[in-house]
Image 1 (cartoon, rainbow, N blue to C red):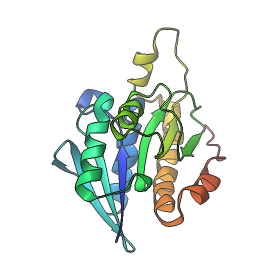
Image 2: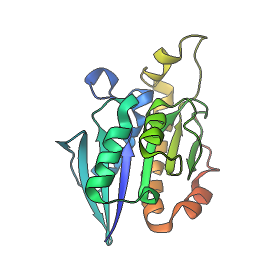
Image 3: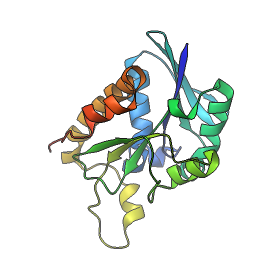
Image 4: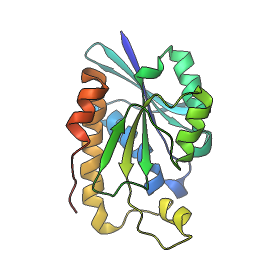
Length: 192
């Protein structure tokens, strides 16, 4: 049975719930809920297992905080014997507008500290990353406040639409592979 690790990044704690920086947690939650699975707190992460037409998805939400995500990702890859080409990380991206998502099979972490830690821990940038555009509409010097803020009321319909499409993207990644999935999703534009 082919196994995949789907890692939704975010920070644990009620104060971070449903903030821009926690969108990886929210996508993972939507995926798990769609397939009637449940998270359980295990070593370094909340973990859920999904069986999907002969494939197993191990879905994690690291409990290590964003900046130490690599520790949880590596632990679960090793524990479940999952190759790096079967890893998909779900993460927020300031450099992308709210209207976009982007799937890549390699590339630098940019300013994303969770990705930086995963790349350093795995000693490679060659793993799939789903970047969820959160925009960059904040005053100079207020980046941290912005990423840790909740969505504005008028953004929520687009965020919900994007989360649903991201769940479909994860399923397509599992069944169709990286290249086809990139072609299906990277040019989508989500309207406010």
